[in-house]
Length: 534
Image 1 (cartoon, one colour):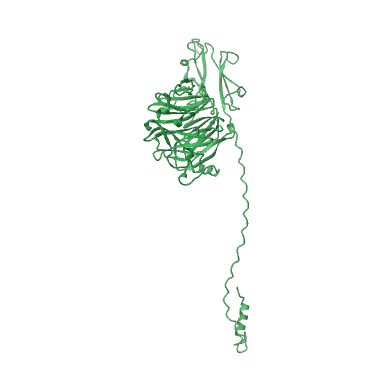
Image 2: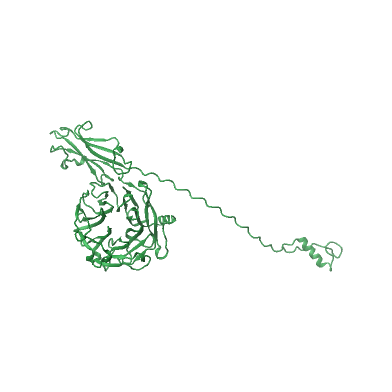
């Protein structure tokens, strides 16, 4: 308590009254003022008032509506008979916008036609020979990045009324080029720091397209984490990399990939596959560490590390489900190429739980590019070994105990690529020879001891360096790489590709309920996953 000077003086007067008069000197004159007393101690501060309640955060604004994808321009040519437009006949060239997105220039989409006419006799040369023209489809390449039409001219030297190959004046050839692929391009996934692998698949419950993507990029990882779709399990499950599984949301050309599951991981994978069973995703990976191990992750969760030393000189594994059992064709170091199975119920255990049923090739380093699929209720595998492609099958995979139980039903000599697909109750096998020649065959496989193969004619002309077959229901489709171009045939028997574009990188083709889906990613270049829909 602070004491005032007046109160202090009164207190002193009472205490000294017995000795002297209060405030008077002995001579009766007023005494001098006494010295000021010391200030009292400061009082204790009062308690702070209670803080007010924070106001409620405002709601986030809604995302703006996505803009409409641009339409593709198309070109079509047809013969023009002799008449008002061309006295000696020629070619009619129609261009227009593919308004309905079906990849075909329909009559209502055509604009004003252009005519390229044959010359009359005597117009091209003094000896009376005629100038002739012809048009042909120009595949994507140096002249047209997305394909187009080549207009060739020359003199009809043999007078047969047709411009033959030897009569073409190559220097005078002109090109009308498509401005974009004929398929709709969806919004690409964001560019990332590192792209390790990607894979397309179909969820067998709804036949919808799915995409698995494995990448390393802090910004994109955080964006997916903020969306609540990516799991960070910590410990051995955490790390700088991410894999995510996406589905297509929206309709047609307005569709876009949306991540709906995935997780952080310390690993990076040189090859991945995406499979489905009972609607659950199984993302399988070939990790180059530890001598190479094959991991399987279910629904973007904990999954399992199958500590199987796999040969990692190239693609080392492929998986498929039959009767809800997970089977794998794995090239294992010091073991060989094996047909194995895995108990899905044991996912989450960090141990080697693969059961090797049979070794089909003794030297793993001699077996590459395995592919395993379910063909009806039959398990079919294909792979390269010793310069040839082998195709094997079993209708009772659970009872396989030796290589002969996984019956070889076909092969390709001198093969550098092989792929298999199931459609229209038939197995399709495609092989690429060392010179790039593509051959395709099909067969019913109800009786594995009496498989009769039938050649399948395709429109592919020229050498092929890579391929991908895909089948669903009654439809089988084909994608190939030829030089710098990726070409896709909506039906394997189509005469010309419906997708044709100069694109670098790996590609994956999938027939799904949304249509034909093609994803392309230059893993060593811009690392962006681009998807096209037909």
